[in-house]
Image (cartoon, helix red, strand yellow):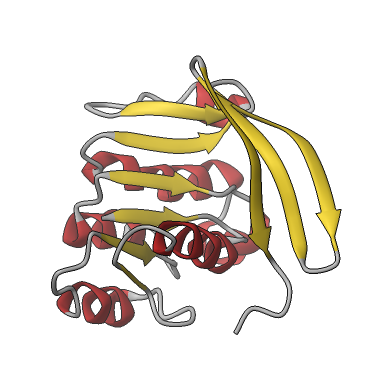
Length: 170
């Protein structure tokens, strides 16, 4: 199970990750952006013999991401970002960061997050943080008519010429 949360970009990251994994594996992912307690439960209850389940987790209030991640028990979690999009309900950027990073409390192995001060200073317990921009580097990004191509490096492994069709996805 791979859990995805963030203020913006959850659905896009979920769709792209599912597309990449489907090249080799059987993948189930959240339908459209059904990312609340009903949609997450519906997704998890639909798992059959899938190799991966990519679960998008949205929130309306403090504690919701913690609850959804408790239900999903992801092996890996991804936080796309944190912005002020929930400010009216959570009151401060600090509260938004706490709400989003709560996904890591129920994650079994890794949490993948942007290399930003607010995420670097968070205390991750029982999970290894992997920072995009420090631990995972991306480079040689080229945009094409139907998508993009790029390379990534994680630890001593470089993968070149990753292609994603980001336009006209059916």
